[in-house]
Image (cartoon, rainbow, N blue to C red):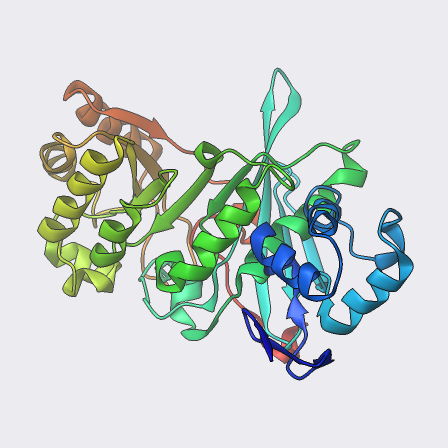
Length: 371
Ligand code: SF4
C-alpha cells in the first residue's frame, strides 16, 4: 500500500479515497503524487505552473502534458471548481467582490482592490477569506455576527486568488494580482495550517511567485498563534486588529480579548517583532464616541510606542444591526495627529468597496434563499 498525504490511498494502483484538490498541494506534494502515478517529477512542476501561473482550470489547455497522464490526473484529482454566483463592482473605486460557491455548496466572498497611480491602475490586491463564517463574533463585523460554519482548505484559499485573477486578466490585458491580504471572512490563525500552506503555494516561484512581503495575514489577536508565527520562515507580514486601548472597550469590540487581553497581546507582538525584525501593522477602526477620543489616541501611542509598528486608521464601515457610527473626518485627523506628534507611523486608510459591502468588516455569507 502506498500512502499519499493528504488522504489518497492507492492499493495496487486502485484509488481508494476521495479525489484530491490538486491546487491545494505544494509542489513537493504534487511531485510525490505524480511519481506515484508513474510519471517523472518534472511533470508536477508543469502541472503546478499551469494551475498557478496560467490559472488553467481545464485539462485540455495543458498541452505539454501527455493526454493519458491528464486523464489519470482527472481520475485522482480535480482542478479549481468554483462557480461565481454573483459579482459586484463599486463604481467609485473599482473594487470588485465575488461570491463563490464551493464544492459542498458553502459560499464565501473575496475581493479585488485596484490601486491607481497617476490615474492608471497600477496594483491589484486580492483579499481572501480563510473560513466560512467566523466564531470570534467581533462587534463591528458582519461575518462575525453570523457564526462559524467551517474552515477553508488551502486550495479553497488559493482558489480565491485564482478566481479573482481569472476575473481580472481578460479585463485588464493580463495584469496580475501582486498583493494578497488574508482579511476576508474568518480568522486565518484559527485555520493556521491551511492559511500558511496557501501562503507557501502563492509564494512558490513555479506558480504565482508572490513575494512574502506582499502577503499579509491579519489576526484579531490570538496570542499563542502570534508566538508560533514568529518562528515561520520567511517571516509573515502581520496585521493585528487592535481597535481599542482599554480591555473594557476591546472586550466589546473584539471578544477574544477576554481570553487574550491587551497586555498579553502587546507582549506577544513585541516578541514577534524581536524574533522576526519585521514591523507589525496595527489596525484601528474608529467608531464615534467608542474608541476615538484624544485620550484613546494618547493611550494608543503609549501602548505601541515601544513596538516597531505602523498604525492604520480606518473609518468604521456600518453594518446592518450595528448601533455604531463612523467617527467624523475631523476626529480621524485629530486622532492621527496625536499619534504622529508622538513619533508613530500612521496612515488614514480609505475604505474600499463600502458601496458594495466589500469593505473591512462587511463580508458575510449568504443563505441558499438569497442567491
Ligand atoms: Fe472574525 Fe475577523 Fe470578523 Fe473578527 S473581524 S469576527 S476575526 S472575520
